[in-house]
Length: 462
Ligand SMILES: [Zn+2]
Ligand SMILES: [Zn+2]
Image 1 (tube, rainbow, N blue to C red):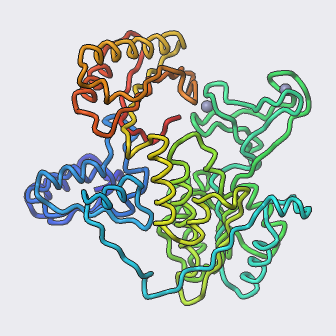
Image 2: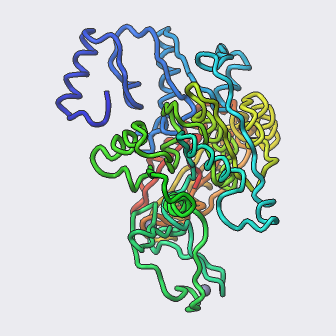
């Protein structure tokens, strides 16, 4: 079951499952709803992937659905990952799940050697480029031995933001509250939220100063700078821009697999599952870029991504070397990923969550209000705030469950010209269903010209 099936094909598959003609269903997220009559097991591979949460209505977490479905059917649910979600591992340690560990790498291969490169020191030593001396030296040796390398950077485009040196403002999308990214080949500024493209401004849109500068690094810039350093090396770039066409994905992978290209530069896309036995060097250009995201899961995501990238090196007979370039070399997510030590990461992270009252110790709920006029969105959020407070005072037993609540503009205040306000609610982990059910009824209240949406533990808090 996958999204490229036509409605007719999907129906035929659905019937085959329902009639019991197919006994195994393989599929992406929505396959968790497959009409299997006599369910024995659901296996959720790479359970840490945030794509298991559907961003579109009906919003659901396929992992939660899998666990509940198995519970009801008396079936076994297996959640598999080298970097489990904090929530999942926590459930395993408290005995809600059974923990089964694979302690050895496939065919007993050694772990790659990981080096954390402190980019602040590179700067002190006069290296202003995006590559550290250690990474360049490793690449040089790798290419001269005829082996392959991968470089990871989690933003596409050339420069990730454009800002004014006079007033310090960054150029933002006129329809969305986010910085625009410079794409060099097309000489355009693009918004990665709504897709809007504009010509780069010659003067600052805020103060008319001509001192516009380009900052930050994306895949396009890494590819270009590497070509300057290694003019004889064939490079492929893999990101949402280069894989857009039909089979775009496959073409790039084939070029690399066949050895026609020696280096692959890419975003998250290159971190997952690919098995290239000739890759001996992996470089993460900005290992801490995600740590600064305003989200309590930024350390968890950084750890998972760095660990996966490290896992790309040395998958064949040849030993692997990995370089994490970072300005935050002592951060526990970076240190634990370098040591390939999940428990080390978990122990730090779970303490932090307990102290700060983040999930799994609490439940986050967010009612998001979207409207073309900001006052409408704001009013709807404030009104919901009042309703919840009234409801809580009418239900004194639930008072202890509500830990924190606030109506405020979302971190990204508008997207595609629509203003966004939210009612952020932090509930105790033992939140009775009654509170959640009440929030659910609020999400169905019809407010003219306002779109309301409820998410429990949303993927993104932006
Ligand atoms: Zn300015
Ligand atoms: Zn936009």
